Amino acid sequence: MDQKPVEIRVLGSLSQIAAEEWDGCACPEASDGGRPRDPFTTYRFLSALEQSGSVGPGTGWQPQYLTAYFEGRLIACAPLYAKSHSQGEYIFDHNWAHAYEQAGGRYYPKLQVAVPFTPATGRRLLVRPGYEGIGQSALVQGAVQLAADNQVSSLHLTFCTPEEAEIGTEMGLMPRVSQQFHWLNDNYADFDGFLAALSSRKRKNIRKERAQAQGFGGTVQSYTGDQIRPEHWDAFWAFYQDTGSRKWGRPYLTREFFSIIHETMADDLHLILAEREGTPVAGALNFIGRDTLYGRYWGCLEHHPCLHFEMCYYQAIDFAIANHLGRVEAGAQGEHKLARGYLPVETHSLHWLGDAGFAEAVGRYLEAERAAVAEEVEVLTSYGPFRNADVEEQE
Image 1: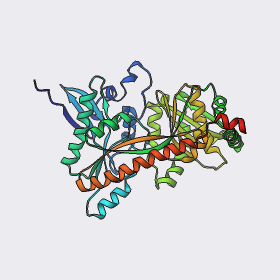
Image 2: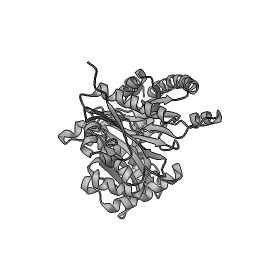
Image 3: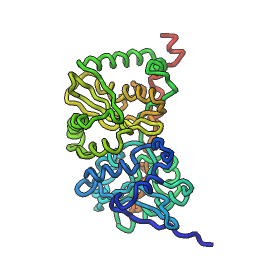
Image 4: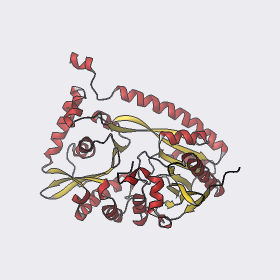
């Protein structure tokens, strides 16, 4: 008997689908009232990006949400965007674009399955439980067909899970491996328990940095849920604008985005503010997942020694330990994180290129890059901050 076909639909806005339908695929684990595994593919986060104008016309991120229906029921979906540039992705393909255009091709627009501006690993092929095989296959085939039908240069799935990377590779996509630094919770009772696992030199350095950070003349405050007040976002917006202007030329997110997530996602947020005499001078924003704390944004109006390390790395570790979270993902790049307890890990993406010759050349590059990243992760791990008992005794 022939299997009934899966119907693929492309939606230009999340308003065309019910939140319950999308989240039934994106975060089914939260149906019991618990937290999503990660908050970034939830309806409320993606909708906040869209409603605030952070994605959409004029941003270079045009929503083309991919949905798959079987027997009239939504079984899978993916956050898909048509891109007119390569900004806000953190898996860099600028060299590919340059080479392709130098050869006379047109690299943009391209298609991107991703969470905009968010270098955090999570599922990109969002499938309702029980439909994993058929749903994942339908999304990959549907995305490739959409790219081919529209004659765009390429399709990219970025910061997907290792399992998705394996599935996509089996379906003919090209795997790419990159690197980040994550902190892993070894069931530490408190921050001192974490420090005890480090080499004595790293322990001393971190204690020194935390003491220096506290010397800015105020206090570091941590807020979640209804502790976060609307006026906090006014201060944080100033910090975010400063960082965005220096890093990207202009901020990716609009001010309205923070107002929306204040209303819809407060319980998923961990806001840290450095305050002096009641006035915030620096801030960091983390998102809370089911087992992971995701460090996302940082900014300041005053520069103080080690305050960035305290607010982005050490406060995150404190929160993860207190809330029994297994991991802190502190964002993209940064070998300086290694000395502060964050270890190198591989991250994954998948790529499809329409031009066979170009795909072959990129495939060779990716093979060499994967080997180089694996070697770098191994080397950096060997230089990690955790103590070696034999060395400690000799010291």
